[in-house]
Image 1 (cartoon, rainbow, N blue to C red):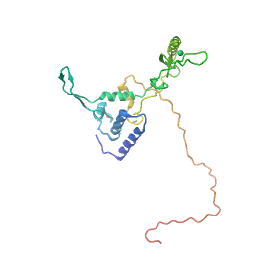
Image 2: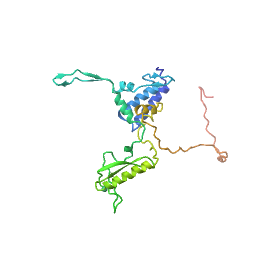
Image 3: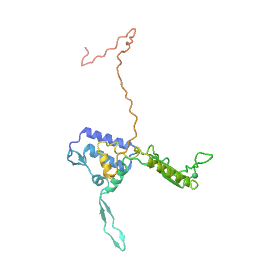
Image 4: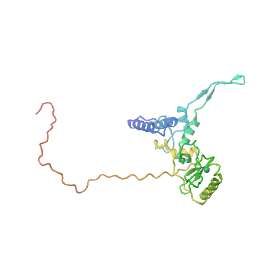
Length: 255
Ligand SMILES: [Zn+2]
């Protein structure tokens, strides 16, 4: 079903793609998928399959066919013979991986300070300074029992025994407590631009174990109200009002 394109639909598509392009977290192939989805949801291009109950559906294959279409791999010389060129299907796995990576979730790596490749400094105790600070030989994610968030801790060789004792204590503390699910900190980049799509349904399809993570409570927006007070002060009156200039609509001859 492709209805007539309305200006409202075109405008919505235009606004949506503009906002996606302006989003610094939305780049590359994921942005490309976002553009495709905006066109699909706002302009119903390509036409979706209609489901019972009036919902529309597209499949990931629809996206893959358009964005990452059929490829022909050239023939290869192998063991004294040329193989024939091979045609592969659209790369639906590329779409799957991109969308999986954008599932709204908590990722401990995003909670980790500094770049992922940086060595975690040893947090072993010292006598004259708070922590050791030597480049760590080992590191692990410790769970903060109160929040459920992960905290990376490292240890140098000298502090290895201390580290393992800390680790065991952390595991025991986690087992003894009811640890809350930490709020989401990654993913959902497409979802924030395309709210009409049932994202939770897709995310469960991509990861059957997915459960909606809690979101950080955004502080309630202040309610600004502009009201006319019941008692307005008297309007100041100018002592001597100069006569206002008069404008008249002149139609043809001046009267
Ligand atoms: Zn150390």
